[in-house]
Image 1: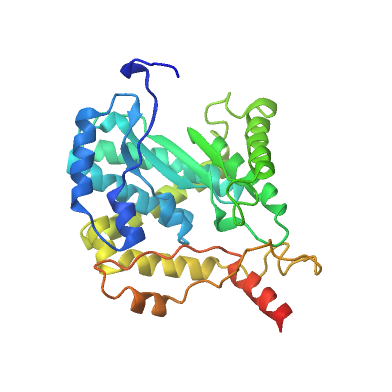
Image 2: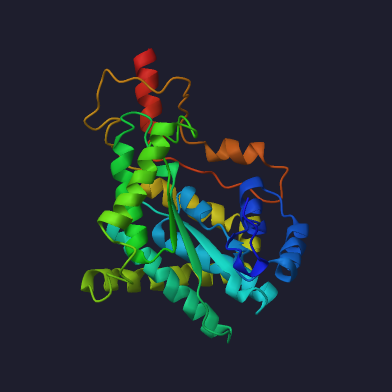
Length: 319
């Protein structure tokens, strides 16, 4: 009910042609024209140059791969639009449960952005980084363990320098509108901010030899990924050629855990899956490719680390 002047509006607009193509398998050129229109119409406080690089993480990409693809994602828009909308970029990343790696990953993203701008002779500009604790790390069995997973992930993202963090409810897999889950997620935000004061210190990990080394290593590895994408002709061509899909499939296969806490590691044998929740194993890529053979781009496959273990447990109980 409040009327605000245009120059006071703050927020983010989510139109990302690259992510849409990676998710659906279709490249929509008209979305690029929509971004061009937003550059003319969007107030300065609205971030509209959106890079949903969290999707690469949700599809199994390692920290270095997610960063490298994020850099290629950003580069695609920088090459297309130049200085237009430069102050209105925002980038989404997933926040995983390896806390120190997340700190280094988010710090490294700042360095990669700065290097991109310098390489393209653009003025140093702040990049708005949004992080989210995705359902990729959640389990349907022993769901309250997801509170611990989210706390580690959010801590890493905040200390690493994310501008905003979304903590998903611990029971996001089974419901998105549960009052208890949403309240606990909000309380986690409050505890990190008002009890731990994580939003009061800028780059608290600076000077830590371990974190600095990890940050430098991720920057170097991510830049190699960026250069490989460049050899493919850029992020869109790399998607069309299947290079990104191959890279993410390799990462996901190597990162898939052998045991998952609460599922097949220290499980509660009497626990049932949430009512109405059906667990399915990770998609078979060959079958996925056959299903989408008519598309110019093979859609990326989101993964959840516990899905195979949960499927085996559920089917074993049924039999």
